Structures are given as C-alpha cells and as structure tokens.
Length: 162
Image 1 (cartoon, rainbow, N blue to C red):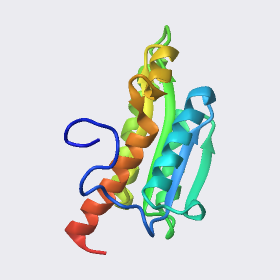
Image 2: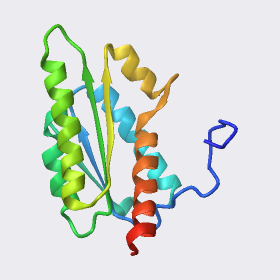
Image 3: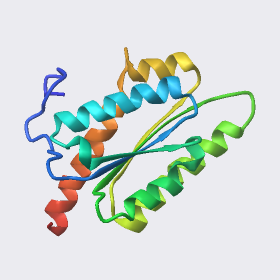
Image 4: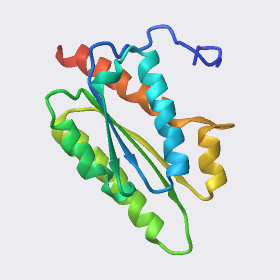
C-alpha cells in the first residue's frame, strides 16, 4: 500500500527479480488456501519473480508446514519461503497446539537457515473470517506474506551483503 493507504506499489518496494521462492501450502481447507496461493503467485509475478523460479509444495495440513519449509529453505535455489495455511478454531484445544507448533516451527526453521520464511497461516475462529482474509474484505494474506518475505530478503542483503 502507498503511504496514503491505497493498494498498489509502494515507493521502495522490494523486488523479487532473480530470486527463487518456495511456496509451501496446506491442503487442509484448500478452498481457502488455494485463494492464498493465487494471491501469493500473483504478487510474486508482479514483483518480478519468474514462474520457473517458484516451487510449490503441498503439505497435508498446517502442522506439517515447518518441516517442509525447513527442507525448502535448505535448497541452494531458494531465497525465501512462503508458508500458507488455515487453522479454524474448534471445540477442543487442538487449535492452540497446531497454531503454536506451526508458528514456533516456522520461526525456528527461519532462524536455523537464515532464510526468510513468511507466515501466511490464517488462525481464525470461522471460515468466514478465513475467506475475508484470503482475498476478501479484510485483504489478501497470500499477497501480504510475499511482501513480508521479499522485504526481509532485501533487508538481509542490506545487512550482510549478497
């Protein structure tokens, strides 16, 4: 967004040209995650990442994202990883265990590898909230996750060099 809050290109927006990006997307709630994936792919393209430099890997569910993200981040041809998923609160504490495990696992994978790993996992109370965040009224978290990882890649390069 611009400084005025309008959608579109920001001044100084991080480019994805020449980068390899892995997208790890959960199949669970694929009606939501497919929307997140479409938003992420569109934003990568808009930022200059070539289709052939994007590797998409599916995970059975959100809990499996950290291991696959770690494997993707270990690849020499991957500069950033975008993780997409959806966890909907239920009647048990399973939601808390999954959300906690996924968030700490993705953070650990990023810290271990030094590769930016974007957290595009919706943690919501209802599917309606998920749809609103997957290209609906509340935004597109797939696009926003790409924005975060590309900005992180650029920031790391400015700190440690190419």
